[in-house]
Length: 346
Image (cartoon, rainbow, N blue to C red; front, side, top):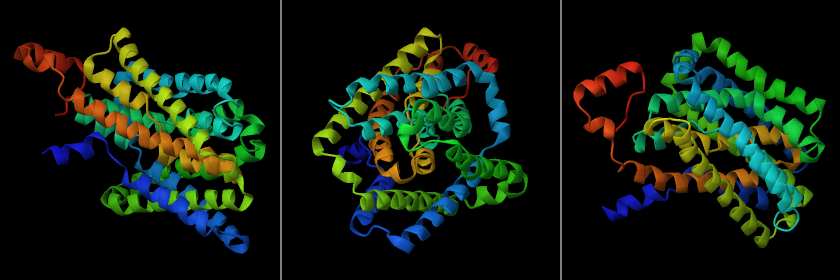
């Protein structure tokens, strides 16, 4: 049994391994010349299709049902798009002693990305939290992030992040927002197909992201920007990200208690409010940073794996917490459920 528990406590995301393998392929065989043009065009199409699928999957009914927990969702959004960016701005003081300017730009971009959906739900379920609220919180974060992340990047990164301009904003609208809205509009007719073929389309999702990563890192190799990163700088980046993650985990847990949330909702706040989406961030970085995307996504890739490992340990420990509601008398539990505190998940 001990052998079976260790991977659950410290998971290595197979997709991260695929991403690292893709980076290795891009380092050895970067796309050049006409091949780079083909890869760039395919990457653009893949990003548009990816956000079309995001729109087709998002259930408007689930989102509306979740408005009953509006205080929790607003708090999650505040943690994701207010507190995180403030920490990112504070990290500016670490340049150039610990971080180079390109790595800092990537770190700041990381703090602007929306929260995860799947892993937040999984960890909330493992910790016996409010799973329906986690679903809604992740959906709201993804929806808001399509607009909030580019706008925050425009105001905080400016021209230093990779030439953010009116043209970049137009690209965002055409590559991200328009396909997403098209998916939402067509969900009525294609929603069933998307649900039935979830596994196959999930592979398409990941394949699209791998193509985006290959294109971005190929551009970085051709331009020689990887000479700017040393092992010491990478170690410094990891240390900074570990501090950011620890601060967010503590703030969301104890902040939730101060705001009067119950245990189940605090679990949602901690997992949804402290995590960042690799799937949403990589395509956005490709659009926002262009040829500089390879260094911009490096902090996000590292943070993604770190948050999975740490949150897996926390969720496992939370699953052993005493649950006062379960041991309370039946009538009290029934009336509390009727008020709408959220369903539990074992």
